[in-house]
Length: 167
View (cartoon, rainbow, N blue to C red):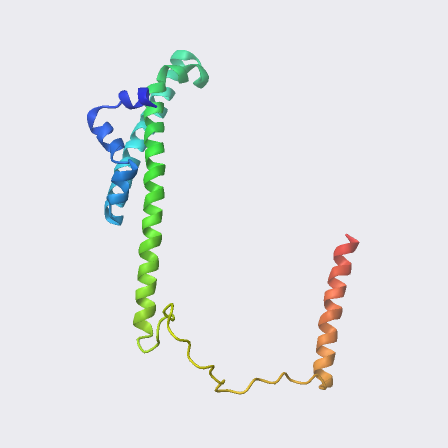
């Protein structure tokens, strides 16, 4: 990896240096998006260069397999930027999840201003509250039409399963 980093020019080295853990943890979500864009452009540039030069050398060398070893520098540079992009993407996803949860909490708080939040740890528990509504009673199954409908549904399922099993 060191040899690959030494093949980069100064602006490219600076771009890869920006993907260190300490640097990435200090960036905001917008900063991470900007860095992600710059690294993606560099990766795309070297991937494109690699493909174009390899395809141009096919006639000279007689095939892609033979042309590949002659064009490894651009491929290695693209790989360096691919690794850097993966690191930045991970930090960006983490920052996006964090900001999404903060926004969600703000929206919930704004939607329910009179509703108290979750109970604070160590706060006394309120007395057990009695339900304000009565429990719903389940309908009785004495209705003959309902019994027929349930039986028809079960029979339909049994016929469908029998058809499947016969295949």
